[in-house]
Image (cartoon, rainbow, N blue to C red; front, side, top):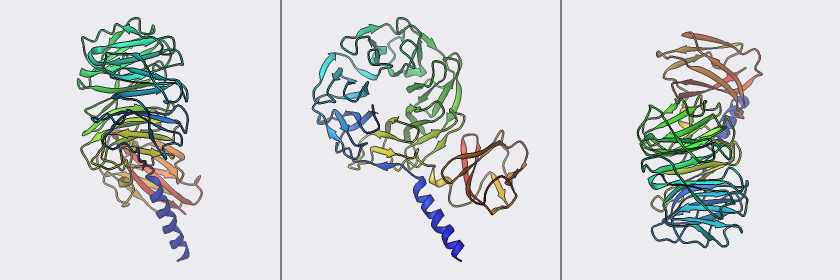
Length: 404
């Protein structure tokens, strides 16, 4: 009886900790939060759009425990800081600060921009409405027009993995690439969607991702020459993607279900796991300072302060896939197990595979399921509690596995 009681306490504690997105109060009623960026682990900034004009940029110095509104007027879609004190917001214009937001200077005006990015402290790029593009090489003091041949198509996101190679995405599924610092651009082609691509992020000059409003996460490993479907999730209107490491990435947006989607990959986009976001707001931006610590922000939702969500544990797994301990596509037995566990396919599947992790989330086994019944030896595992994930066609079933 004592062993059973201890097991229940352990599982309860674990299940309450796996959903690790928690809300933070931005203290900005009525403001839609468009973009978030943290130049350090504790100092971060949010670009805002508010109809009353009361909130333009928010700042935290304690990882989001408290947020303050900075002294700036205007509506902004993007924010990027090259240091803890020097940064930019872009929207109605481009504004620069060198003192952490205490004061701002307008460095470009009369345009509508959606994204700004700096690959280093002196070189920066911005894109926006009607395919407009701008570049600075003096730390944002002056900006020059880039000729991006979009045919006046809006560009929503720009990312440069280094100072000369960059990518921009926008309406009509458009993807543009430069290899000479924006002097010339070439349109790339993907065959999956003609809907808007809202965000692009490259982990190297050749490997990158973009997300669409109709549920696609696309991936390339050859600099955009070809693209593959990394994930398709019906009803997910993806808005932002960010990779703190080459393998770990997050994508957020708005869903048609009860929660807004937050998807995570730990294998460079081979598989994605839906997390428990604990919010229904339209999530507009996601940013991580390391693979486990990050924020996602979104639209104001009827007085609820759930438009800033924070995690220090990589977000956890989607709770609904873990309990109750039932399967739909696979049968797993015996459980508890001693020497072996068998995974049997209930439904036809192409190339499912299994991952076994410990309760800390460390991956211990990664194996493709080639037969209708797959026997896995557990001789190498110590007695204890583990989690067995069966991943099939971008769906995940997670089961508690007890080795005794």
